[in-house]
Image (cartoon, rainbow, N blue to C red):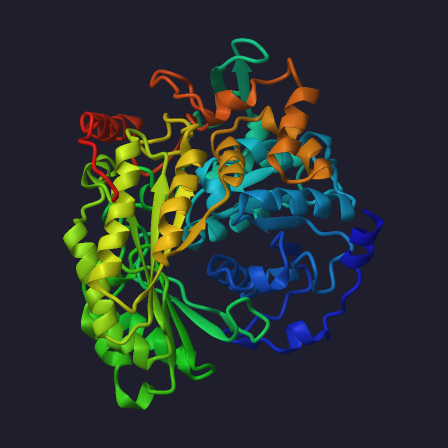
Length: 557
């Protein structure tokens, strides 16, 4: 811990890290009474500055003259105010809670909101992890912003200014009235017993809203980079958000369900001008979104970036829907410095893709490979998943058979198959299903049968999936466990050790990870409203279950 505190104060603002930044906005000059604020990303600078969400929120804060904002990362920071009033965190990865807790400790701030006093800053958080299910982290935050920063930040700051000089409790009660602001301490969670299910989640008084609704930005302009730097994990990249959410609505997919509706800004009025701004400072462009090529004007973007005057531009695309991989797209990417493309296929089983609502055929997958090769791409990466609800071993065998078909159809195209284990996510139709305990064996089966075919198999750690599921389905009782595990390490063994130490104070690991929950159970996030009501999620879940019939056994020979 001493080393961490030393590092906390080690790096001056004149460091090469901040000096290398090229800003695409003009920071405001803070007023004399500006609110001293720290905006933190609980990971290294190279990771945090590559987060488009972090970039955009920082620029929004730094553009206000009523704030004095200092950035903080685990390895570098700007000069910090001696008495900050606001301390914000952008959380993009579950295990970053370790750095979150370490930073609070290093800054001399009590880990739990209930222990903080008037001289401590209000600790707020946002980002995809907290918006999905903040409950395992709820006791560490004074308030959590649920949803899109475009509409949350301004209302949050204006409400705070109204009660800036008030007592802490008054501040929190006022902020709890702002749509999308969740103040965990103002909600009481009761349990049937200490190791049992949740009995109820209720506001502590009538004036507090019984439900907090995620706020959704519905404007026609999405995000683009506010800073370009060679120190980013993606060196010198300028990122443009082409779409938000995804129209496919795969039933396990948080990125789709939590961010609905699907939004697509105008190519000519918004996206191309944004790209032009980026090209003034860099030659590397990244197009971001859950399903970039499903933008209705994607061809317009492609034609624009295919112009000869951009022949020295390097282009990357975050995600490509399989049936939109055309020879033209592959050729453009090849000409713009990209050698591979990534598609999400989930499985080689048609039945399983029907269960998850993946509107895709094996023929379309094979055609995507043929088109990628025809356009000059050298390799194709496919993303898959095991342990999906309703999956049988024969579905896994069909994935092997499909990969063999692709290899035979497109010889010379390097194939990579990345595979994760299904993890239930809040606000999706599959939130009631647990992690399949057979998933690890199925990953090993794929490894055994794909590697001899010359296919590069890259499984995501099954143990990491278990930890991810624990956090994604956790309730407030997990906060004590998280405090313990940060000292034990991030292995599954560390979590089991912590569960053993806390036996009798919370349910077992299997309750959170592997158990299929009943649909009448009070979920940890029942008081937090996502884009779709629970009744709609249940209909989508039932539609999936209706496809659970036994599949035919298919050989893999």
